[in-house]
Length: 146
Ligand SMILES: [Zn+2]
Image (cartoon, rainbow, N blue to C red; front, side, top):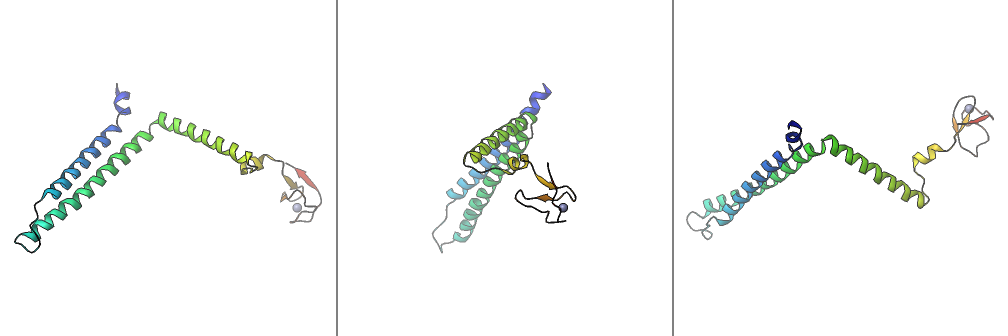
């Protein structure tokens, strides 16, 4: 029972966010419906200010609601272990597909290069290029493959 309620926890900020966003929409509508007398008439400036204020704050609240609801609920949702495991698996699969695609185009990823045997100087352990005859660091001619 407790597990079930925690798995739905991400819905709470989403609902709060939607409520905030709806509040913002209501403010925008109120602002849009505010009667503004034509310019220069009495009360024009106050009405215009209210009108702009309501729309501006309304948009701000709407965006805040969307960001809060979306962001917080996504953060909670994605922190769930099963969701995280699923995403890790998906990421791993995508990486594999990407690696396969790259190797098909003849590009070897660093990981594959690492698998190749490395030529290392037997004296100073410096990694040496395969076609190098002497160690660039100590001048030795003896190498070991690792
Ligand atoms: Zn060396």
